[in-house]
Length: 478
Image (cartoon, rainbow, N blue to C red; front, side):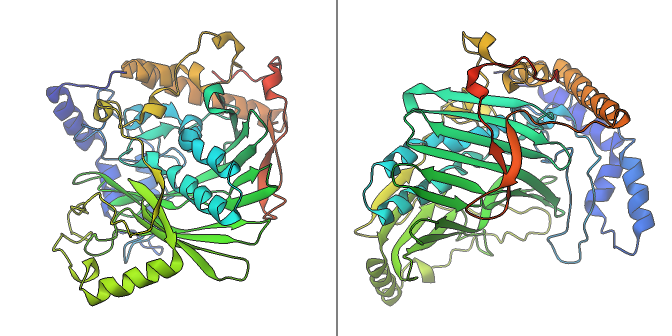
């Protein structure tokens, strides 16, 4: 996987981008009030005429300027910082150089990197033990986002991705089931009928001035078939800081509630935001309560490192002791605030979890390969997702691995990737216009919209049949 570019080309790209797309910087930096709709509309029209230099190369994690933006073609912006108003950028197509060579469907399959945790939960006899391992899986499912500031390719309508890992005992199928709004659905199942894991995601991206916030709207559902248990949860928010100035860094925050619909037990996990002094960065802390709402265990750790479980009474005793001895809670370091004027500097936070005596390790992140920084900060798992297996002829013509723009970018041919991306997007638009003229509705192939029986919310349900390998009626999207 090639991702390097010369320094001279990099500075040339920066210079040309600044000259050509001053309107984009105007929109990023200007506070456009709701009353000033005319000004906002004018900026929107100007942005649609922006042209981008081809050599502005998004060249991996070591880049300087190429990673300054984290936006998608379907991108709704709103203000997080005070006095900012929503800004609509839904029609601004960003160049391919800001992508990483994976489709969002492949990125979504990274939930399964730590599938061994599901297998472990299936083998436990106690429901509280199962809940804490499921909680660790929910955290591990978002751990691959650490330092991944590149944007995955937007899937084309009807695009699919399959992931079969026989040695790990599961297979997964995903499909882009909607384009406006963008919705990706997936379904993973154990090869031994031990579990099913499924859901759909409608990513919502918002621009806040100095950062971009991603809200992965959608419900994750995990069914442990042997125990006749079903767990549901939603993923935390993700924020990429310093998209214009400073060093890029990522934080995840929000409350994740995992429900066991069979036993009534619940796990509440709080992904802590950075805070004023950065002491909470990457921290996750929560508790497991039984059906009578009594707290039984505490879950804690960092989503970038490891997660632990400890008895609730032991945790409370440790916290009281820590307060009496003036522990870490009173030793505020003088890191720079996350609210710096020019850039949200990432605090210097120790990547070590303080382990409470009596705790049990639930999960530890897999170390990244040595050359990860030169390969878009991919994990070892992510590096395998676009590989073409010897039996490639078994794949449907809609599989991500066959996308020419993603393949060209992986091979380091950015010009070809950009050309192919534009061709595919125009082909998709032409197909949409043709369906509109013929008054035809798009028909999904492997999923259909329905109701999640556990949450009562709308969801995309796998209809089956994908692994029968009959792909004769698949659409021509590439």
